[in-house]
Length: 239
Length: 369
Ligand SMILES: Nc1ncnc2c1ncn2[C@@H]1O[C@H](COP(=O)(O)OP(=O)(O)O)[C@@H](O)[C@H]1O
Ligand SMILES: [Mg+2]
View 1: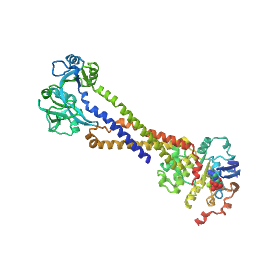
View 2: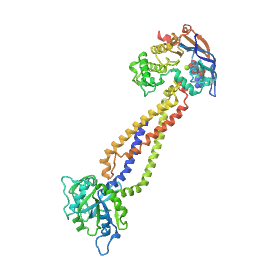
View 3: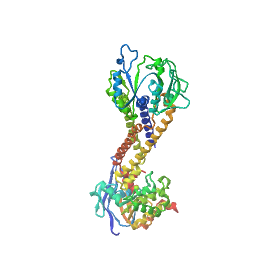
View 4: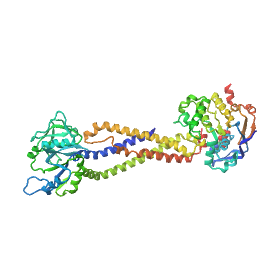
């Protein structure tokens, strides 16, 4: 692996809801390289989302710390982490959540650090690039699921993030749209790192490397061709 | 949407209540509007002179009035009353008996003219002219009897059935018969003075001056400004009650709107959670939620104002005026009273949504599938 952008040291996450104690993450130490498209894969409940939330500062680990360059999360307040997310990260979630009263364009502009002419120009560029140029002035209710998710991808790119975090971005989409969205995300590795969580190995065909997770533990980085053998159900459906 | 509906209804409710309450004020001021054209000076019983049949304004006071600067004419008159319809039931309205020359002078001052089809009362005959507003109020036309000796509740009933011979065009409510008729048929009724100023614009000031300077034990001065003052004082407790009721309505509506905006927020919490997740500050999110609420409440308010205006305008001629209720659907005061509704609702929404956002954990919402 080349120079690392984001690193964790001995991350653990314990959920204790009184009735039950769940070890969602145990002692995870990983490094995520700069300007790469990487995947996090593993069965349901293996801690993929938990890891992503901690990497992106949405959740605090029970133990261990995360560093982005020389920025240690533990030393910063929740408000600092909000600013960090807005300034340096982009997010795509499983459900394409958009403000229903605002047009696709207005939703995308939510991701812009400053609302100026340059931001608008950039947003228009993304709409063209993502193949939704005609949808800019439509409301989310007038868009299909795949179109909405592409709007979310555009929103995630508006602040030129160092890292885009995507948690199961294709799970609510059909096969073709899923591939389209992943292709769009993977193209971003020219500008920054893309971390995609999925349980569908097919989506990670083009990844630079894939982190395998099981029972809250990291099994280490793999080459995508090695994990493709563990094909998920979507491959059979597609062929 | 239910929020907008609540706002429209409450704006309509409050604005119409205020308009209707204000109708009392408006009615009284309309009835006494003629005191803007001339200032009646009425002798009291204390002004009676032993041996004289008629009570008049005492000579020394008459002299005092004539010496008052700005005074033009002091017109001697007497008259009878006829009933008009008001919010508070039948109310006596005065019909002055004046000479033809003085009558035309007063009508000119008020800017009134005779509507086609009518004529002025013949001197000495039981006839009268009244303003179009009065004619509408009483629902009478030329040829009808407008006053009768059998009228109850008036101070001085008409000496004989009085026939309407003409209708006056003009906004001031006035009624006139001939002085020859009142002098002949009402010999015992006290004789008042109608005081006018050379400059019509000075009538209010001179009226106040007469009210302040003339001996109150001898005469009663009906000055417009003083009537307004007395009226407002006597209506004060009613206005207080109205404001209490309005305040309660606004509070309840704002409370309900707060609950509705809470529901609305819950429905859309995933949107806000995602925005919080991508790093928008809480203040930005509150601003988004609140500006949406503010737009909605403003639209609701505008619609409420529009609904109130249209409904009252429609009902004005068909429901209110026949019952003697004068209303002004475009009274800015009644709409001013409804302004706290959108303001309170927006404040309530800010409070509830800020609270909810402060306690929002985006991850738990995003994970909820
Ligand atoms: N809020 C929570 N409270 C308690 N347990 C949780 C919570 N969120 C996740 N878990 C548990 O933590 C483990 C890891 O979950 P998650 O990171 O969502 O896995 P994945 O994304 O790989 O499916 C699971 O066993 C899950 O049940
Ligand atoms: Mg997950």
